[in-house]
Image (cartoon, rainbow, N blue to C red; front, side):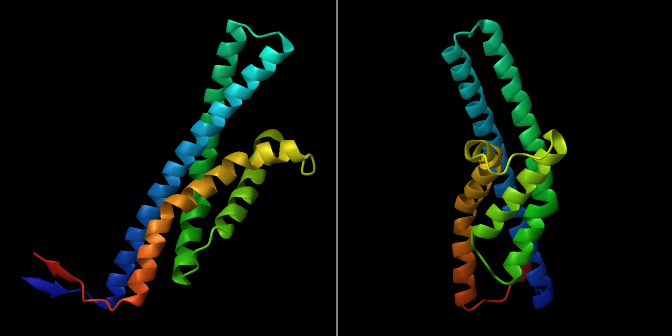
Amino acid sequence: MTAQIPQAREDELVAQIKAHIAFEHMLVSVLIGAGVSAAALFVVNNAVSLAKGGWSLAIFLATGLDAVWFAFVVFLVGFGAVVAVGVPLFLALEKVPYRRLWPYILAAVILQYAAHALIFGPPPLFEKPATFLIFAPGLLMAGLFWRRIQPLWRAGKMENEAPKPPLRIVH
């Protein structure tokens, strides 16, 4: 037995599926971004300690714990950003449909600045290396999401260009 789904319900189902897929891609981007950022912090802190001549096993372990803590904080902030801003932004842009990278980069920079200001106080804005390091995790996550979501956007573009057959429920 088959039943045809009304067009409004079909559009709602497709939007929910796209939102779930985007959420998964954003979450994977957050996990990768947190891990890469923590690894970079670990390497840089150990390199600085080694360059200063004060490297030891205790510093190695301390920087490891700092990196794990940093990854945890970046993941929590990223997860909150995905839930609060990322998915709603994706859904709003999909309605248009506007499939570009810059809205996600802008959201990442604003959220990274706000998170840093809430946790550590306002970051420096005009000290170029410090500013880049503050915004690097968010920019990395936005770029990773953009790379991961492009096949979905290409499929959406092809879907909009091709005639749609009716969606049917098969029992």
